[in-house]
Amino acid sequence: RRNNYFPNASPYQLWSRSFASDNGDKFEAVVPFMGESVTDGTLANFLKKPGDRVEADEAIAQIETDKVTIDVSSPEAGVIEKFIASEGDTVTPGTIVAIVSKSAAPAETHVAPSEEAPQKESPPVKAEEKSPKAEEKPTKVEPPKKQAPKPTPSKTSPTEPQLPPKERERRVPMPRLRKRIANRLKDSQNTFAMLTTFNEVDMTNLMKLRSDYKDEFVKKHGVKLGLMSCFVKAAVSGLQNQPIVNAVIDGDDIIYRDYVDVSVAVGTSKGLVVPVIRDADTMNFADIEKGINNLAKKATEGALSIDEMAGGTFTISNGGVYGSLISTPIINPPQSAILGMHSIVQRPVVVDGSILARPMMYLALTYDHRLIDGREAVYFLRRIKDVVEDPRRLLLDI
Image 1: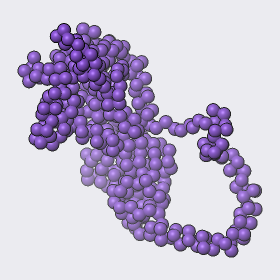
Image 2: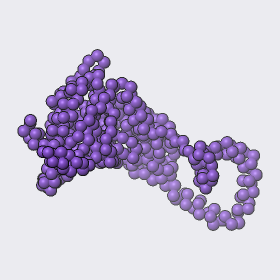
Image 3: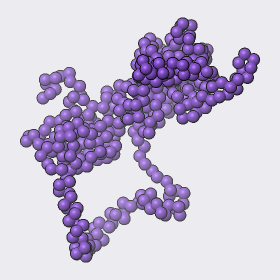
């Protein structure tokens, strides 16, 4: 019906709310539209149980896709009558997950007395109840149970130390996000002719700049001045000076992009996600810091949308937050280069003939050597080094 009146309505609108039954009492909770590039997902877990009371738009299950985790919400306020799908099922947009009834009473009103009754009557009835159950179980129930408890080694924790090493292993399904990460990284290695060049940067001036203006920056912009915004601005300057680093190979063509969308790698408990700061070349320091904070918060909460992770022309990965001294990052397809930041360490450096302790950081640029020559890669990384060591270059455009 809705499609006739709104022929251009999005799939999310069509699937976010389902039609009620004939009597208007029962509603179907279905898998919503998950993005144009996502065709299916795995029903990771239920957040509610049959008989639980839910409100309209309250999440009752989570769908794990290749990129994000999506909630399945209740279409109306009511009680979950039953689940149609099971955990681990592969589902597509529009798949019915649960039936919600508006008139059913919550399970607590029915379950509570039934649970209390056996507890109170258990002493006299134990002998009578156990005897028939014991007669039925050996004939019908026990044979399948003997086949099912094959994965019991993980349950018998007291005996684990006595078992051989092979028995102290657990096999669990790989999450879809981890599968996607694994496939993309391997595809990157198989596709690109990756080469990494390194440099080091003296962080003295940038850290002094940050220390001098951090309070005024927060007072005016409402966000802290971090190091990432300067690296993003430096990367934008480098990409504008070396447009080939911002380009990408597409078949027999080279696509030059006259805009800069910087992807920022964020590690979460579920895996690595790479949200995108759009049009970073038009942003100032405050806009970049706000964008990074907003995306990082969403990534931690698992609230990133597909659109917020799609695209990107260049990636920055900061392994220094975990203490990494040096690494060789892997290109994020379909980009052509990635910058790796690392931890800041006090090291002896020769400055004007004197040996001084300076806060130093190693930088690594991995690039697709099919498209980018070593000359352009080194110039690009050198530009980042120059800007970070003397941020005044950004102001003067030199």
